Image (cartoon, rainbow over all chains, first blue to last red; front, side):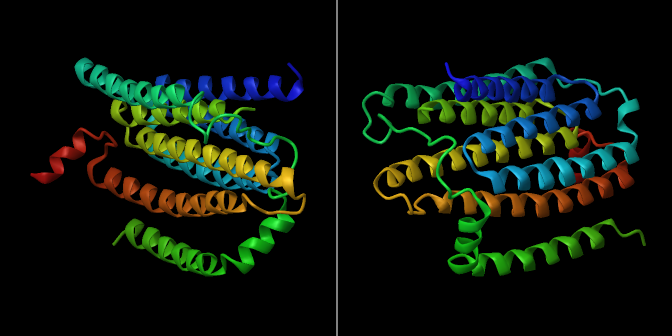
Length: 171
Length: 111
């Protein structure tokens, strides 16, 4: 096992354990902190796949901005002090069974196909090489082929900002 | 890494997000599990983009074959950021009116 494999398994284990702790934490602030750890693990995966721009954007946008927004909302609403009484045990159990059935059925599809399907056999995600994740080629493709979605996303941000302010206004 | 491992990891993260949406009662935790689902899909998209790039890279060292996947991830992050701001504004508004972020309690809005 060379270092890339060790890093892959370590980052995957960290992401899965942190995601489980997001679910199982009682305090919402602890859930947010575990989710930030998930984002760090996924950014580590992006760096391993040499998608460097996406790794940094993931850290800045998700862990830096969105999670800080969540923390502000939780702290302003003072939710960490409230005790959250639980849902019905049968509802929780049926939720876990439903999600577990989804996971088992989709993993079974991949497991049965991974040695026979021609799209999956021998296909390897290229680690540490390849330059499509670097900012130069990505920027060139973004501003030449995808410039229309880029401009429309600026309109989307404007509408989201206006919507958030209108919804949150006290009158 | 063989691509199956990335598919399994993304499926596990996605289903943890699904279970979180179904099990938790706090609306903010539900929202965070939606973000977890989006991140699982992002990881899988980047892995597939590198898979396609690996195939083309072996033939021609200057090809940019898998770049669409990474640009799609970029736009997913854009949409997620916009959605989080509007969603949290809605949650704050609901809290201001009912003083609770319990999704079972919000059921009573229909009366």
